[in-house]
Amino acid sequence: MKRSVLLAVVGLLLVGCPRAPPTETLAIGSIIATTGPNSPLGIEELEAITLAMEEINAAGGVLGLPLEVVNRDDRSDLGRGVAAAEGLVQLRVPVIIGAASSEVTLAVFEVTRDARVVQISGTSTSTLLTTAADDGYLFRTCPSDELQARLVAQRAAGKPFQRVAIIYLPGAYGLGFANKFEADFTALGGTVTARREYAEGRSSYLDILTEVYATDPEAILLVGFPVDGAQIIRDYLTNFAARGTFWFFTDSLEATEFVTGVGAGSFDFGHEGSSPGATTGEPYTTFQTAYTRRFGAAIVNPINISSYDAVYLAALAMEAAGTAEGTAVRDNLVAVSRVGTPFGPTQYSEAVTALREGQDIDYQGASGPVDLDANGDVVAPYHLWRVSGGRLEVFEPSITP
Image (cartoon, rainbow, N blue to C red):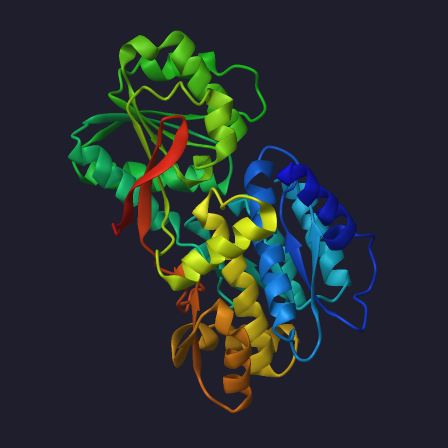
């Protein structure tokens, strides 16, 4: 019910037909997949973005105008992502939130960089984004896989496992995570027995699992999206469950659709997942209350809260700049995230007043501190999760690699 209602809202309010941003609103763009293999995560991410937009407007908008978010559905597809960016650039938006997929984000950056449009991803975690942001137009409010892969390697070595295989999706996210995990796990004395990239959208992954099990792993790291990830685990349960393999899951699999795709009662094998951990402080609990009231249930994947914070950072950077021009927004984005009087999302209007009085502010997000560094990156803790009693459960709320 919740998802179908949201898609109607997306279609009517956020996507629209190509047009120039109306003069009575201040439009920014977003490139979020609401259909395709990553849609379970993307729909929730767009809900978080929508909530931020609505709250900002209720608190006075940006530069005296209501904020409008114009979304383009990229279906987590490279070509669609580039086309979406080109369309949004034609609308002269100063900021684009997204994309979700790291590979699409990097492709979109080729467009936004040349157009001098600020791009902020809340969910692209590939290590490649750090080195791509050489001119300051690319930011992210989620931490790099540099940290998460290190954490998973530490967890694997500490169990202790000596032989781990990797199954990963194609593109910057999967490849970057696999590379980093292998480097860290090997440095800790472990061996990666196999690395297999899977093709998305298949009805069976038995061949990949057969190849992986020929190398006799003690555990498997799965870097994937919910639909294909669920199929891989179903194939494991049907054909290899007797091997008693321990599975490590990454942040993109912390989704209800992954649990239901496998079968809520089927997670009786050893497993754990990791994901950027939202703080348990007041901004986080206030966000969850507001999100649940607006969309009918608490957010499932905490990394999507980072996109909520991306909207707030963009709005505050525009207020600090006194303009919605892209380069000016870029030049103020780090400043509103790091040094000054702390303000949370519920204190947006007070933060705007402080900026207009010439004060420095430090935005404290619902996802935790979002202190951007010179590379446009943030450092944040992670949490560990598993499926217990048919539901996602966080069993370690805050852990730093």
